[in-house]
Amino acid sequence: MSGIENRLQKVLERTVDAKNVFGTSFCVKHKDFTWCGTSGNFQKDEQYFIASTTKLFVTAIILNLRSKNIISFDDRISAYLTDDILNGLHTLNGTDYSSGLTIKNLLAHTSGIPDYFQQKDGNGKSLEKELVNGNDRSWSFEEAIALSKTLKPLFIPDQKRKAHYSDTNFQLLGRIIENSTQISLSDNFEELIFKPLHLTKTYLYQDNNDKTPKVLFYKNRELIIPKAMSSFGADGGVVSTSKELLQFIEAFFSGGFFPAAYISELQVWNNIFFPLQSGIGIQRFKLPWIFNPFGNSPELIGHSGLSGALAFYNPKNEIFISGTVNQVANPGISFRLVLKIIQHLLKK
Image (cartoon, rainbow, N blue to C red; front, side, top):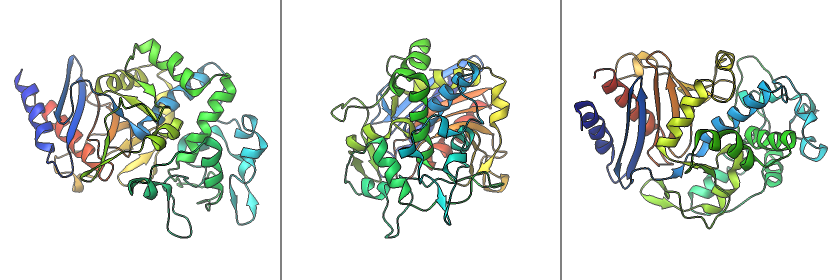
C-alpha cells in the first residue's frame, strides 16, 4: 500500500467511532489515481442503499431522453401524467398551478410541491419520522402523491430564488420516465445505465425480502426498513457499491449518457439545505471559507442521500468521489470525510 493509500485508509478508520459511524466505504479517482477503501463493519465492494443519490440516476435518464428529443425541460408534466395524478397536485391559496408545472420544475425543485417524505403535517408528523422511529411501512406511487396532496405547497412555481427539496418531484419524474418510454423505471436503469457501464451490483431495490444491501443505521441502532426502501423508487431506491457508484459518477460528468455540454445548463443554483444547493437534477456542495477547517473548500457537484451516501465531482481538480457512512441521523459526516480525502489527495 502506497503512502497516499495508507493515509486515506487511516482517514476512513478514524471516522468509525461505534457511536455515530459503524463503517465506511469510499472510492475516489483523481486523474490516473484510483483508490477504494472500507472501514469498520463494511466489507470490500459491499452493497448499500444510496438513498437520494438515486436522483442522479433519474437525472441521467431524463437527460438521455432529452438528447433523443423524447422529453424537453419545458414540457408541461400534464403531457405525461393522468388527471387523477395531476388534479390538486399544487394548489395554493385557492389556485391550482398543477397543469403549468414543467419537467425542469421537478428536476430543479422549483415546483413548490410538498415533500411527501420529510414534510410535517398539521400534527407535526412525517413519514420520515415514522420510519426513523422504527415503524417500517410500504407505499405505492399513488399513495405518495395522495400524501403530498394533503400537505401545503411551499410557493408558486418558478418564484425567483425559490427552491424546496421534495421527494415528490422525483416520484413524478419516475412515472414520467415510465410513461414516455413505456417500460418500467427499473428497466430504464438497466438498459440505459447498468448494462452499458457493466454495473453488476447496482439495481433498483423492489423486494422487501432482499437482504443483500447493508443495513442502515440511525444513531447507534440498526434501522431495518425494507418495506420503505422498496417503496422509494425514483427518489431513493437504488442499491450500489462505492466502486460502481464511482463508475457512474464519472460517466455522468463525462458524456456517458447525454452530451457533456448539458452539464453547464444544470448549474443554476438555489439554496436548499445549507450548504447544499440544488441545480437542475444535481446538487452543489461548497462551504464558505469561514466554515471550512481545511482551507479553501472545493466545489463538489453531484448528489447525496439521507443515508450518508454520495457521489460527487470536483471539476477544478478532476476528482470523482463516491461512498457512504451509512448513518441516517448524521449524513453530513460523509461531507466532512470527503473534504479530508480531497485534502490528502491534493497533497500526494
